[in-house]
Image (cartoon, rainbow, N blue to C red; front, top):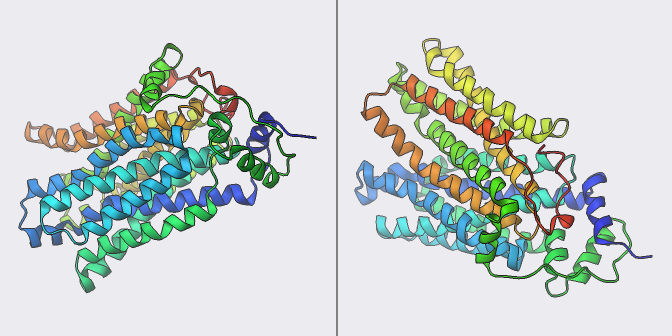
Length: 450
């Protein structure tokens, strides 16, 4: 008796999570931890780099933005190749790119070299983030899919937090270059780990039928306790990466795609405003410099718990409902945050909650997006949405600075960003799964985002 692609997909969707599925999710979380470290390494080393290269504030700002520019480029133009060559090969390629960027950064001799290498590193990270989120979503069951992808965001926050602590030790003992060296080596070491433990996406194998696809599918069937397949369905029509971009804007997908682009742009703009400006704005609102930094730290600490909590809630309620609640709660927290700065205890508690909810909003979008695209364009859809979001991330800190120069108060800024999160919640009300000819092989999570 042979199995069928539909029964294999149903087993992944509806059966209890098996050990190898959790292992695939764990590898994706580890990759996101490395990405969190690699992305924020410039923030950890900024002061030391500025001292060595004699940089002013504007020049350091360019270095800090270079990684985000690279991430946008990687998500927009590199991640979509995962829908053509596979999620696993794309992750391995991007790991090689990111590790090379980090290792070469450790030997950079000028700020220009370092800036270009930060763009290179960001390109690799952009491809990893999009592809690993898709793999985590595709190997998780329907019940735990939201948690699996949310854990990826938790991994990113953990990597950033632990990286900051490690950077303090490394810089004091060996200088700023050692931080880049450590990140490059750690990223390179993850390459054989991915080769040994991360399976290729079942949806990709069934949709694209690459070389030896039947053997790989049957290996997965055995691990799922299902009979082997005797043949695979006909592959989806192939095309270049450009055709994937075009499909995102076809009539059946256009509405969903534009709504997701808008949601990512708004949420990432709000997230990076909050994480970039909060310590400074707390000081401007009357706190000391130390208190401002403490508020920023509590913001990041809350973020570690926010994504995990969202995933756990999504296992019981629909993901879209949980995400909408997070968006509205973020707006409320932002509206009262600065106004409460006169009470240190209340302000710090609210800072923790702001971090919890705002990070959960980002995690929720990462979890929602793979569910609404078919497997033939899933990584293209996720990567493009992330890339659009990165544009918002790059623009928002600069826009906030310009508004402050124009006379806006911190309270005005937080209220405006609160409106941004409410607007995103409104966008989600109009969201529906994209219509795709390959939906049969897609994760059956339509009920979850609805």
